[in-house]
Length: 196
Image 1: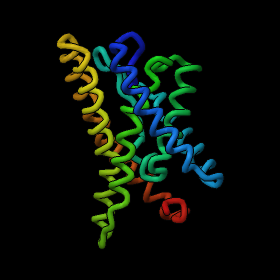
Image 2: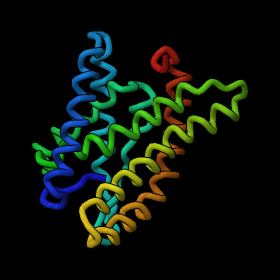
Image 3: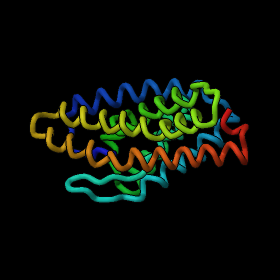
């Protein structure tokens, strides 16, 4: 879901950078010392998940896991994803420095959807399992829609790329839903306090 440098118009890059900077600064202000290990762990999870790339036409897809990052960290997911994207850009050239803001926007904003879903209360185990699947599934849907919308803002020449980018992420939506359900279930068994 990384947007490469040189693809988007400067006004889109600037808007994404301003919004992302504002939310990240807010997240840093509310970040407590005891939250740093958790933010670091989920930043590393996001960083590593992005390394498994599957090329599809002009784009490629990879695991993102922003739903689970958002579920556990809330708005602090912006900090975790920012650090991971910065390191990916500096060390491996994923995305890039000029697209850091817009990439953070398209990847961390959907994490807030995961946070909102994770806060839903349920009475039965099967309801929890559905919600936890959606914690992984819906952020990818929202992120793919955001990515497609941003590409389409760049002009009519990008409409086909926007459609392909969305369709390429459909299998990832289901994979992330399953991975998130299994991961949250595992964490609940071994360290339930981590999810509070």
